[in-house]
Image 1: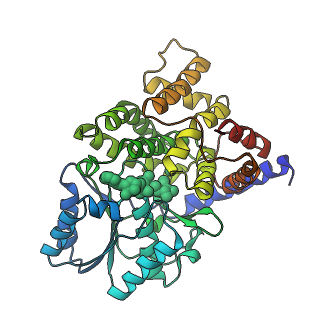
Image 2 (image 1 turned 180 degrees about the vertical axis):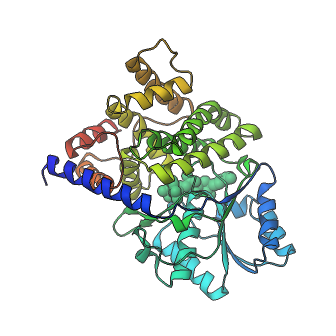
Image 3 (image 1 turned 90 degrees about the vertical axis):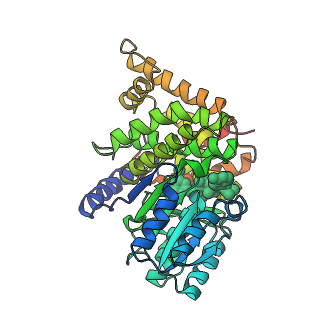
Length: 403
Ligand SMILES: NC(=O)c1ccc[n+]([C@@H]2O[C@H](COP(=O)([O-])OP(=O)(O)OC[C@H]3O[C@@H](n4cnc5c(N)ncnc54)[C@H](O)[C@@H]3O)[C@@H](O)[C@H]2O)c1
Ligand SMILES: [Fe+2]
């Protein structure tokens, strides 16, 4: 399809999407517990609310590190019958989600608690929705496919990045197609979440950096989004400020509880913002690098982000200049253009400081047309980007990421 026609179709689809979003009842926000010890508070609140049979979804690393045991003890001491599914790995696959689903059905689980990063949280969301809807994960892929409310869903994030504890999204990997697929529905927002920075003290620096840059990407993409509004802008702005202020310390001094807690808040604020205002081309490209090469999501975003900001520099100049002023990268005397350049330069500096490389080590020239095609298809009619991209423009950006 010619570029001009694709662009026109994108505008029409976005207008329709905006209308649908306005008409749909907004997702109910979760009850949030926050601070050191809040994960245990959430467990006790579950018991107080009468939860009886619970599936805890996590990963084997967190079990080994001893993050899960105290939570399980608290739940069991309050008489909750828990089973643990720890088979989730980074970028959960259909097979991993189906194994958790089988356990939930066999156990007769009535609620689902996710303990982990985006991967266990996404798996838990899909399991909870599959049980109540009586379907397989594939049936939920796409937008607004969750007909019946999922089993009551709760989240304890152990990374500060995805914001999945508050978002309407879940991502699942189709290994045969080497593609990351999204399930988007307001019903996927957990009922309660605990933002407990003390669980993140042992997160290795490279995961801290990648997940923190994912939060920054959510904040920035939602801020420049054409769906940004008075509800999302303050959240995106605050999250951006907090990532610049606290991510370096969370990476270089991981035991700093205050930095960890601040990053936990930043990720949640950014998640709330993008749940409403959506994301853009950074995510479209990052998802497809992740699908093809298993590049960690936050890492892919961090590498792509400055290039997409260069591409948006004129179209989103007022927003990028505002972000520059908010993080102290430009003062009132700076012109808009100077402020935009200063912001993009600070994003590059932050990425370098926390150890993000500038290239995708596994990227192959021969894959670039397919990655660009898939990224354009993902964004088409769905991501409210400030500037529309052509396939050759996307390929040119990908060429800059070659090792
Ligand atoms: N649902 C959403 O809204 C949303 C948004 C963005 C990304 N995602 C998805 O989330 C996934 C990425 O999640 P992530 O970045 O949080 O990473 P992750 O959940 O994949 O975890 C990455 C690694 O960190 C380890 N880890 C997690 N917490 C730890 C801790 N406290 N201490 C030590 N190690 C710990 C895990 O065991 C794993 O090895 C991707 O699949 C991505 O597509 C979802
Ligand atoms: Fe993300």
